[in-house]
Length: 53
Image (cartoon, rainbow, N blue to C red; front, top):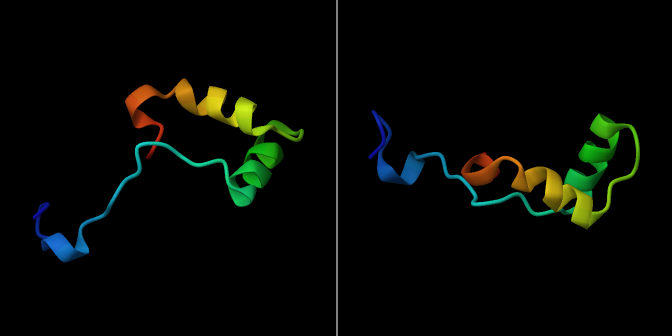
C-alpha cells in the first residue's frame, strides 16, 4: 500500500524509458530534429535512477 491506495491501484514506474516510435517522435519534437535510439538512450542516461519517471 502506498498512502491511501491499495496495492492494486498503486502507480507503477519503469526503470528506464524504451525508445519506442512514440517516444522518439516526442523527443524529436522537443529537440527540433530526429533523434536516434542511441541518442535517446544517452539523454535518458543523464537522469540516472530517475530516467524511468
